Image (cartoon, rainbow, N blue to C red; front, top):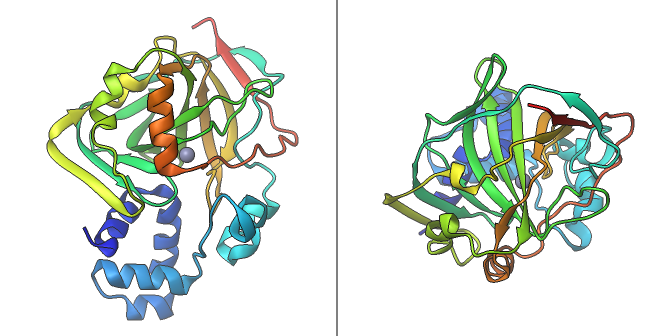
Length: 277
Ligand SMILES: [Zn+2]
C-alpha cells in the first residue's frame, strides 16, 4: 500500500488534520494550486507548515509549539490536554448514551498511533447534543492520569458535534488483567509498520465492546493531545478502566512506540466527576 494513499485515508479520518485541510481551503495561494489526489494533498500539507513531530527529541512534546505557527497552541495554550484528573468536583450529570454500530476493520498505523476509522452512523448523545463517532485510536501508556497514576494504555473515541462541529473525545483507560476477547478481531489485524493499513471490509468490529460496564466519567474542557493541540475539545474520561492482557498491551505498545503527551497544567479548569446517574 502506497504511503500517499495511506496518508490520504488518515487525513480523511483524523480530526487533528481537518484543521489543516480547512486552512488550506481558505488559503488563496494553496487553493489555486490545489489538485485532486493524495500526493497533492500531502505536498500541500507539507508546504502549509504542518511540521514533523514525534514523542522524543527535538520534535518532541516540549517543542511542538515551535515546530509550526499552526501548532502554537501546543506551547501557549492554557487549556491543554491531557491532565491529571485529581481533585475532581462531584456533580450529578447526564449519562452518555452510546449508539455505536458495527463497522468494518479499517485500521491505519499513521506513525503516531493505530487508528480505527468508523463508518458513518455511530454516535453518542449527551442531553440534546449528538456527536458522530469518527474514529478511535490508542496510546501507550495512558495520557490522562488519575491522582498521579498513569495506566498502561488509553483508547480515545473521537466524535464531532452534529450541529457545531465541536469535538468530544471519550477516553477509556486500560488496566492490565484478563485477555480482552472483544478486542481480538482488532488485535489479529493490527497494521505492523508505520504508514501501513489493514482494511478488511468483511470483518466487523464494534467500538462498544471496548467500553467498561460502568460509564461514569470525568468531564473537563481541553484540547487535542497531538499537534495542532486545538482547544475547545470536550473530554469525557471514563472512571472505570477496561482490562486487556499484558501481552495485548505489550503488542500494540511495541508497534506504536511510546505515544503519550505529558500531562499539562490544569490552570483554572474544573474537572467534574459525574456520579449518581
Ligand atoms: Zn488520542
